[in-house]
Image 1 (spheres, rainbow, N blue to C red):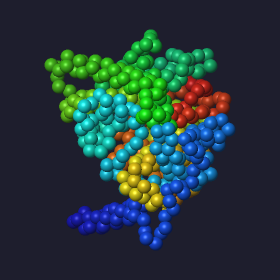
Image 2: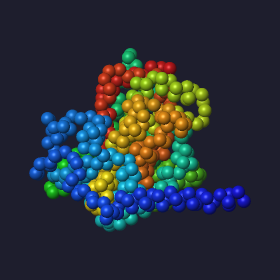
Image 3: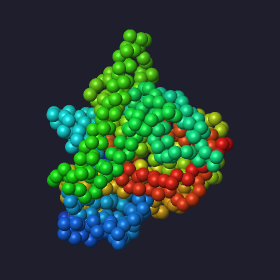
Image 4: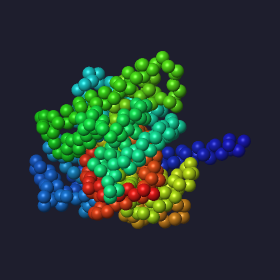
Length: 508
């Protein structure tokens, strides 16, 4: 009886929230007669010249030359305000950057039925050239509209259900423990890892995502792994692909008019990734076929590939390949950023180590540490949307088919959203509502490292589990220290943390 009496109240509250969101969306899309909008051309931004557009600002002597990735958006915001326009040039269309959380909320909520997320046009070109039927899927990164929706609907139950994702916990912990043994074995007399630190983190990331995607170990930790092995090749190809795609799809480029040298390089990289990924997938499928006569696996024992093969083989092959593309540099860079911030904040590291040593099943401080790392050093600077209607944003008329950049990296560092924003404070994700640091006081769209809505990151839960498992094992095993100047972050399609990696790993 109690529940039935509460139901109408709950429904009323729900409808009120939906109604408020609709009003907010309509305010963004329906200009009022009494409000005269400023024209699109009046949107502030760096000055532009014929042909070259705003390119000169990024050349030596320009205002944006050599500005770090973590300060790029902040500099634009301080000079031009919460909305900034970049004119198109050399095949790159105009795009608008938004630094106002409420405006971002209006757009993202309005564009959440079949949202168009631009970017990676060159990858889309490559994949579409291999598929004759336009209704056939090419992947979540490159598809739009109904084709994307059908694909996403197929993979969502396998990729996003918490119960299913948790099935991989023990397997990922085994990978993490093996990586700790590797790290101990390759330390020098100064307790620094020999070789390339970023490659080591990529090896962990690939071994982890390979296990989830394919259900088997890829032997990334083999000490005798040659440089021309499929594992090492895949790691290099993924990195080169993100960097090259950034040059083609996120900067001015003429590849849509003629085949530039960078375009040809990208096509070779995409082909290489497809071939190497298929190499791993084919081995897995052959092993599955050999073992088909054995006792049938339960769903708990199946990999993502196996589960999707039971539903749709075409989707299974594409999703497994995309996981081996999008699941390497993303998690490895986040782990590197987390280790850096914990090394620079030893009291936070000690507090995390105490939580891990307690043996408690739930680890809220561990989760908070990763959330705070993603606030300060997110995987990407922002999220993209293509408008499907005309908008009124901050008093400016934004036409349909305009590319918008949702600049969450900059907004998540706003002092008015996150007090003491420049400080690494995981506690802000745990304190009560009365505390000034409480994260819930910030606008919900000031922080969105995994995107929003139906186009949010499909691998979020898997990535979080991988990172929580590995970070816990590292802090349990080592006291992580850092010396020398701060890390450098280079923006490409992703935020890349570059060397030197001055980490010291001392036994606890």
